[in-house]
Length: 143
Image 1 (tube, rainbow, N blue to C red):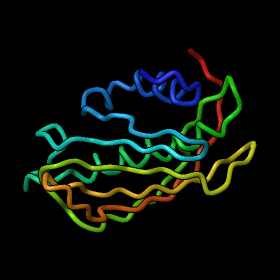
Image 2: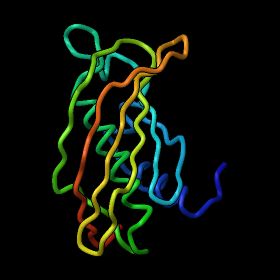
Image 3: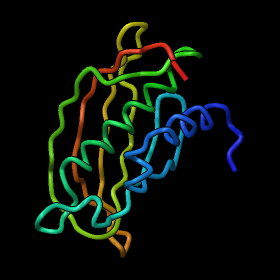
């Protein structure tokens, strides 16, 4: 059980995300300006050819970048995505996806992040899957 306040801030917010709970996303690492998440392969995240769906990859990248940004936001604030751009590099089946979000620049009004998504095969082999750039807006926490 983590007791680090930054970890708890991110985990508490992640726990409120019904879609991420439904898909089975897990928090792996939290540092100032960096968050890593995983998403296991299942029929909940697959597309018609049985690979990870691009929407699942995009959602995981969005969440990783967003939570990296949250680690730099003032107390009492959350973040919301204003936009993101993603490049899909390859499609994969089985294993899991891991997304690492990093803050590029944290300002009072805008936070710019990036995220890398890799596929981790059942044998542990890692392969690039997607890259994303994102703009976040800090907003007051309402819960």
